Length: 127
Image (tube, rainbow, N blue to C red; front, side, top):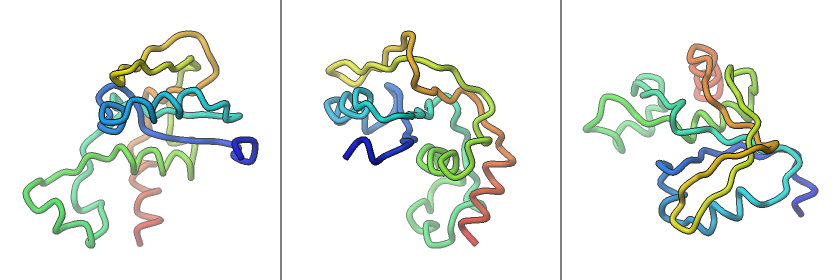
């Protein structure tokens, strides 16, 4: 099955809730030999104004003027890889408590993004 998947893009890092909550799953994601993997570091996140989100999500975030955009960034990079303006090729390992360690390797770690291009992509799929 893995050989049928060409490229996987997912948020990651030790601040990423799913890695902390289920480090075994994070280890599987990091160790599965997909041909191309991109990890979107939590460091590239920026707050997403509610105006940029789908109106259907508004009631979920009624108390916050901004939303975290980690999953949306990963999805947008899958649609338009040029959103990622800074990358490093690294090896990603995850320990038993969800801490991400980096070394030499071939996983693309996103370090920066084109925020305007991200917003344009988000709006193109939202509308």
